[in-house]
Length: 251
Image (cartoon, rainbow, N blue to C red; front, side):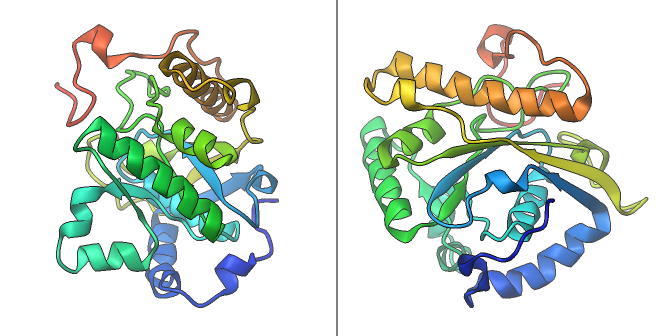
């Protein structure tokens, strides 16, 4: 059910093909990826894929799963990375999207531009709503940020929630990569697009937070299915625990 016929996007020649020829087999050494709910990922048109984030390795799992489902895995990346020689050119050739962090005005303007570009190009993008690795001690999704929802509402794009589990056995959160044993089981579960219709009429900060919480609730629900556990009733908020939201966790 996870593997599907390649979409027109994947079948077209692009810079993704040489990258996939290297990345897919390499990731295959570390992980045996099992995909469920792949029918929820649109095969045409723009979308936002919103995964949980608990290991530095999980973007590779999400990228390979997205590729296997017929879409090119594009991520949002820090704007500063696009100014690095060679790396910036590579990111642009792969269609990655720069994220402005300089000011609220700049970020808002760029969000509008990104939404328009996604709609016009019919491309998808992977956005981690948490913004960094979860701080939750049990690795449940923590409080989300509103960037993914802003982009979705501006472009009228579907937000597809996805949870992965098992990546921590390959690379623990802020830990070292484990080469052996190979082919550890990693499960990927996609859900139907989150219903954001109740949040489209009014664009207030409270509404954006509520819409983001709806997305995080779906991601948490999917992770609960994979783990066979009930997600916490309240999501972890780093600010309430004296934690920074970026950088390594303090021991």
